[in-house]
Amino acid sequence: MEILSFGKVNESNLRRIVSATGQWVVDTNGNRYFDSMSGLWCVPLGYSQESIKVKMSEQLQMLPFYHNFFHTQTEVSYQLTKRFEQLFPENKWIYYSCSGSAANEIALKIALRYFEKTGRPKQNGFVYMQHSYHGTSLGVSQVSDQNMIKFTGARVSFPSWRCDVNEFNHQQTLKNLEDLLEQKRGEIAGLIIEPVIGAGGVIGFDKSFFSGLSDLRAKYGFKVILDEVVTGFGKTGSLFACNHLEFRADIVTLGKAMTNGYFPLAATLMSDELISETVRWFNHGYTFSSHPVGAAACLETLRLMESILPESQQVIGFFKDEIQKVSHSRLRHIRVQNCMGALVFDRGVSCTELEELAWLNGIIVRGGSGDPNVICFCLPITSSREEIVHFVSALQNILNQFKGDKK
Ligand SMILES: Cc1ncc(COP(=O)(O)O)c(C=O)c1O
Image (cartoon, rainbow, N blue to C red):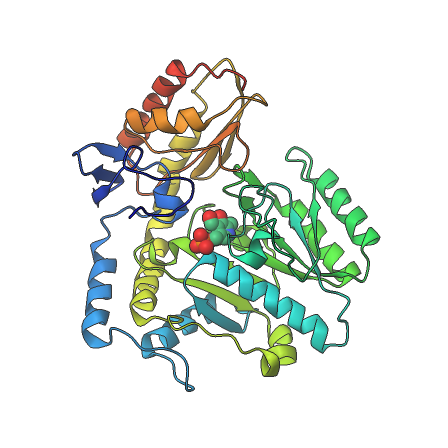
């Protein structure tokens, strides 16, 4: 039997990972790799956070499972909810799930229900940004700008429109958005957006963009779903990107690093307005929603992140300087958003070879996921200066081997 996963995996191209410490993972052949992708943007504190493991194992002893059906919830999920209430005072409701895709799926469903139940059923479409990635399940893949995950065979029951992004000119992106909103006036339930587009190539929006977005929301009356599945939990330098962007979303989705990747957990945080109008019509449930072990891991991850994040910013500053040193004849520019970054090559250059070269040189980067000519990385914020120097020199080494032929 073979594992079906993202792309084709078989014995010849399968690497089996057996252990990890700090920022390093080890495969069955004993090879060590510096994990410059933080897993999949989800292990920003590295693999050796013993206190998270201890909290998880204590929770396993006390209550290894209970669900949130029959009007119940676990005590530890209740405690976690109280923490989120302090962190997101505007979003009074939270729905726990197990993946970023599910968190976004719920967000779409809630927004659709809201407009349906407030007498505006024609307001049932979504705008999504160019390059964005919001998950692979049927609904959210329709609002992701990734051809490889769009399920083209299906007829999904809501319309969606893409907004073009100009990464160098946020006012232009706002203009594109306003044109679309004007054209589809009365048809748009929501806009789904990542504060920094992650898998699509680490493309950030700034505070002025989000201020303009607030104005557009007020003018056109749609809801904003802020997908912080990648950016949440420290990766932009704040605990959540919405903190430094000073943007209050109607719905915020979280996932990935909620437990530092040690347990599958995701969440959809929603405004009171949305829920008071829809809750009686919203029956949605997962067996593993609010899993107590995930909640225990998340509480400890939050505690650790709050203490480690401020002190990590010095080393991240060092990383931002170091990464500027890499060069290649076909490298067009380097994107950096705190610990996340991307190398953007000339159009037509294929980066899939770079990903493989990186493995062979003991580092992990993500090649050709959104745009084929881009590689991404997401440095664990617990990396040392020595590890950063190692990463940047290994990266330069693979760039020296990379011809960057146009394909
Ligand atoms: C921004 C963003 N949202 C949602 C998702 C989907 O999360 P998951 O893979 O946990 O379903 C991803 C996955 O990479 C993502 O990058």
